[in-house]
Amino acid sequence: MASGLPIATVYVRNLEERAKVDQLKDALLQIFSEYGNVIDIVAKTNLKAKGQAFVVFDDPEAARKAIEEVQGFELFEKPMQLSLARTRSDATVKASGNDEEFELHKRRRLAEKDKKKAYEAAEEQKRLKRPGPGGATASDNRPTKAARGAGLKSTNPSTTAVIPDEYLPPNKILFVQNLPEDYDIDAVTSIFGRFEGFREVRLVPGRRGIAFVEYDGEQGAITAKENTAGMVLGDTYTIKVTYQRQ
Image (cartoon, one colour):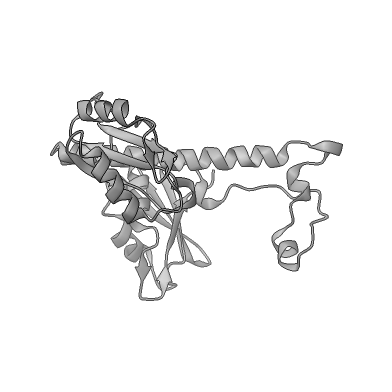
């Protein structure tokens, strides 16, 4: 929490996972609006976020009062578990009217998200390498891609887990894939050069469709990645943007 300002967001857990998002938001709004002005409710449908929501007030005192009085209240026959969120929400920072602070907050949040993914992937890699019964590691018993397709287990003892590109920790260099084959340095620069701290584009001799984009620091790379990943070029090419593997 960069500014040290009080938190005005309530983190809600133990919600009914089968409830539709719109239905859930409406129910939460009816309950929590009794305690103050609710400026945003964040609830998502992905597997990790199911059963959770964030209720954002415009006043920290309203958030605290809601936690005290709504704690354990049953919604869809499940008692809600409430606590203050660990960081300020995007809506709270944006409401402050300071665009620069909002952009900084957003970049930090995205960086933390990427770091968390990288940490989880690294922990999974450690787990797969950890010896189990008989001295075998989990990765020894995990089928290779080809074996999985054939429904067979791998017999290769050297098979190891590799962190997926999407979960690599942030750094100042981006690896861009699936660019149109006729894209040169100028074309790639026109996409990535508009972000703060841009330094250069490097193409790979003899390899079309890929490039490395370097920034002065990781914040510039984070912003560029979040704004370009999945961009469609020429109605055919959906570019993939990840951090360089180090």
